[in-house]
Image 1: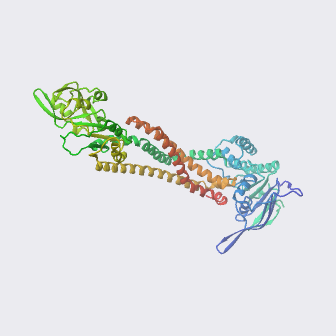
Image 2: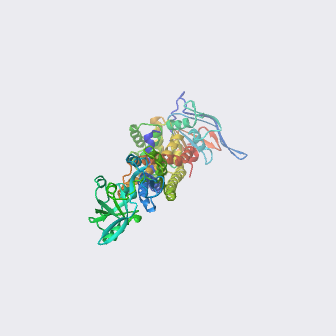
Length: 241
Length: 397
């Protein structure tokens, strides 16, 4: 199932993480969630991060999305240190570079599909006249163009997740961070979503970092990391020995 | 975020939460409408109330008298009110009308069917009636033309008419007074008429020509616009008179005690009304605050999601604050519409003409107040929303 990695020699990594660590203090006890994580993600590749619950997968994703600050280490995005950004610059980084897909889709309730996809464009101050086309393009990518004016709470689980993917893509980010995007979906719908990811990665050279604990989902990724107790124990694992 | 997007998003949110916001909108709208009605109609209500004060003894009426060197009514005094003094007093700021009167020193006499009747007689001008809130129960009252043309007409108190003619409505009858014949043109009525029902009234000029022992016109009554002007007018009267004539023996009477009581009563009525309105508006403000606080908690995941989509703290703060402002402004607009309706209906019922400028000023004031209310009630929840961390917000259950 894995396709050849699109990484070419000399190409600059979009995400370049070195020695990343994150710990919390629980009274006198220090809890290390991530320890010395090194990670590189290149344009157009799908990178999977696997691991059991509590292994630090979501923490890693939150750090990559600048939701959390690491306790140590460096994080370069397209060669630029993004850990020193202030709150406003972090928001701008998320607006322009990152798209998020969460496990339970997390669409804005009692809103239409259009409204959900419009918010990232509003925050990016995209002119109104351009928004409709961008929204339709993103929805068409996930075969949801016909649902543009539907209420989100009337969509099925698979449709909601496809809308969430479209929302993550509407601003044409360079990286999509997906936290167990198929966790609540059946196999058929999971495959649909993963096919979309592959299509997006190939067409737009969008890098996708995908958190999962499902080995079949990991099979869609070009490279898969495995996290255990905060340590990235293997850069690549062989899913098909 | 662009302003048009901000307004659209916020207004949409407020409308979608319409049912939950209805109570707050109603509270603020009623408070605003009440405020508009009280301020806009207040002046008219006060004027009507002042007019009706005759029932309480004429608290806004000032009696101005030139007593002369002694108080013997038989003495013909040298000093009386000059025409220009009367005119100046009538046009003083705060004075709505003034009248000059002269009383016959002794009882006037009339005879009918061999019966002789004695009664008080007062020479009046055309302003006498409005200053005293008198009306014609039948016929008409003495007017400017009667005074100017020295007509031989009279107005009778109802009791006097009944006493002489055996019935109250005697308009058109002829009555001899001190051996001169006068046509009865009206019967006196009105709020403060009780102590004048046995009196007869002649035009000032006619009485001066024909009635013997008529005192010189040394007595004036001034009617102030409202009680607020009474003290000001009272203080200014001596100066106005002295600028035109001697004010020797000047005596000015005001029903201070009555005035004080009426003012105090009205102050308390006004105070409690304003308290009620303020309470309604504060309640509305707390309502907005509560809605926003509950909204921030209920929409925690939404806030996290929006931040994940790239919203800055300021975007979130602006959105919640604008929602609070939309809510308060919508409430104020409903209140202004209700207030307008109430003012129009009240004006029709009271037959008054409230000042349009005052209404517009109130409407403007209401909008400003609504803005302040929206900011005051919405700022804290908006700041709380804007400071949320993405991770905790997105994971909020």
